[in-house]
Length: 352
Ligand SMILES: [Zn+2]
Image 1 (cartoon, protein in one colour):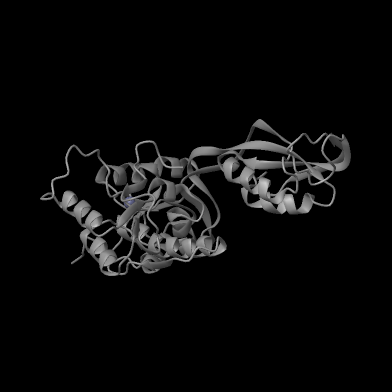
Image 2 (cartoon, rainbow, N blue to C red; image 1 turned 90 degrees about the vertical axis):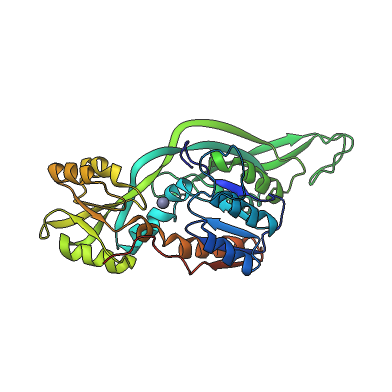
């Protein structure tokens, strides 16, 4: 899901090394890396990429080179989740929207739509539910519906050849079986694990199935979110709510204090460039960080309010958010890993 210019995933480390102790941090800065080493973590997960521009050399006297050395010497891998986490469901922008109490959220700037495939699989009668269950987590969606499937019954035939170990029938004899043709909508990017799950859940040695590429598109995904407050608020009151909700030390406001806000766009980090998009989509205000002077002027002219709560305050909630997400995901897969949230992070900016 990451943007093309981004550098996400493994930044440094051995991709085959176990990850038993994991720390989550916003920035791969010295303090976080040292804390991870001190707590004997094997993996540090950060939002901002550890290596962003391609490196021509790794000089240990440079700040980045020195940190790469610390990581390698201490068997600490570093993985970064950046624009992919901004876009992903439950990622930075969903966390931000949720924290600010927005409902009916949609992506602010669409970056892609889910590609879908249709799987038609032939299952002996009575086993269709277990196959559907196994494929459920790879399901595509139609609007607000998932697990959309269709089943029709018929007769399947097969002739087991030498070496086969048929679930039904015997070698050299053509078999007729009452089967269900189960059609399921799947996400294309989840096809490989979905087929592995199918093989496991299907009783046959060689399940028969057809895959159809679809021109229908699934859910849109994108950066930022746009949603609504439960009730309109004056900009000043909403600004105070944002400041408190995010624990920001300061917040800059563009727009009249008493203007009513109901439709709210958010973009964690440096999202000020989306103010035109937010205005076009009917937002009264955009909450983000790193707003520049000329962007503030142009937003003022357009008539959209801006709340600059800072890059740090609009993204730091990913630390607890990713820790919680990982705990659920790893727990579901029966992986045992200790996941901690780095608590020592500080905004580089302070206010007087
Ligand atoms: Zn950021």
